[in-house]
Image (tube, rainbow, N blue to C red; front, side):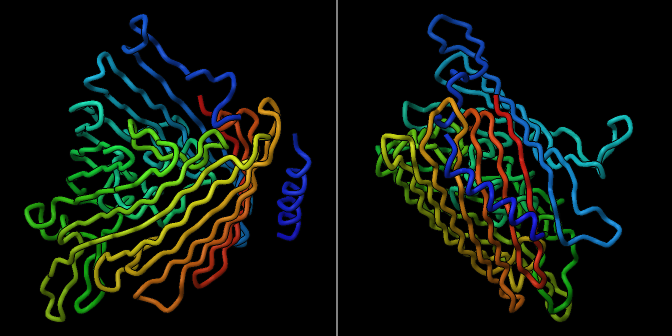
Length: 406
């Protein structure tokens, strides 16, 4: 582990001597098939892959500490023939590794599935309604985070606060409305929660709640969940055509936003009384956050910073995997070194999150230290990150990720 830490430190030292915008100078809008002269009728294709080598110091004695995986492999299609409506189609896979491969590619371990399919209809220039399997989430900026242009290696896990509990991989099936009033932006959704979430436990008499309201109580009492996020853009205005929030603009915009959001699922959780009677409990998650991203000088250096506080109520003494009733504080900050946009540029960063749970005395503390190396903006980059998680035991991982985004 000592050698890995030295390697990570060496990358930071090298970044000081290294000589983009958010994307590649060669990208020029990506793959876009135009069906008329002005390009208002089009099909845009976005694809990306993230490939990882992971060193984990907390594995059984008979297990290698080094492993490889395809973290994400995705395709996103945007289809529009009139400004009145837009179709978004998103499919791919996650976490492909040697354990879930199949000799002829037919296993159940990890296959391509639909991440999103929704339509958007513009009411006017500023307000839109839509429906389908969508990503217009509530709670916080990180619960709407894009995986194409993040600052850190991956999103803060606890910020995706409903993933697999009420949704399919952070996407809900429902209807949404979104829009803006000058510098104020909003998004609201009503969703049909899934009954077969990750938490398939049965409540114990007099014990903690489980997330299984729709499965146990039925869709009449616990079928729908509601979400919203609101933000005010003080400086440069961010696009809200799509829900995917940018992690770092690499000095191409000057952004300062504050936001607040919520997720609520009436009777989404269930607990059992001492006599075994099932009782629904309301799930409610609230957050406030702030995001700042700006160039620091004309030479290309820039700063990216984010902070959020999140209050989580999944029911009485709820604790399951990364989720738990309690609170979370999370922040990260990164510095982009100046340099030629046609050469490698480096962006070291640091992150820290602390999560408290009503059910236990221990906090989950997660510390991250890493650096991005941009070969062609976000379109071709490498990320090296050391992450340490303390929750009962210490777990340290070092991950090297290569990404190509077209």
